[in-house]
Length: 220
Image (cartoon, rainbow, N blue to C red):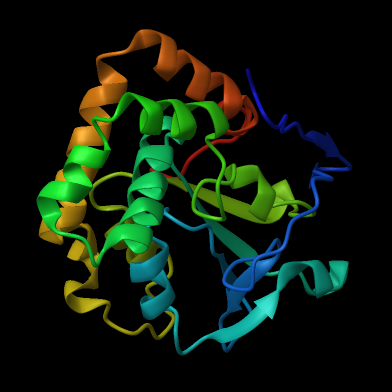
């Protein structure tokens, strides 16, 4: 049974989404505006957001909902496969809650049937597992360049805006290689890939994200 339903529409070439939420770390409209105001990176958690937030740290922290139509920059948005993003987001959430526990205890937790029932039934726990559409309400599609999350996406964005000064993200590009998080991610991914019903339920929960991915064109 789905606990929350997420839907969106496109009105006047803008994403229209009315689900209300607030987290201090991430909110709808959060972006980084370049000094020349030509570009704005829209931050969506678990979509290379840690690396890109460092890369754009010399840009101005802003809110795209406050930009006047005449001053709209070119928005940069990374979208990710919703199931893969949920696995990554849930890994982050569970690791944050349990990071002081022994590694073996954390990994054993993921194999508990009662624990699996909890996370697979509720699915949305905080901003790292909210649908991507939650962070894009009000965004103008005609002013947005979309990038699909994959190996090399950070380099693609760097090449796309190579005339703007950026901060080198360095080793942060590999932040998911932290040993225990990587093991948690792989175990959770294996559980989902081995259960078509659970995977189908996650896909349905994030159907709005799949709809958006099918709607937009990605930068190659």
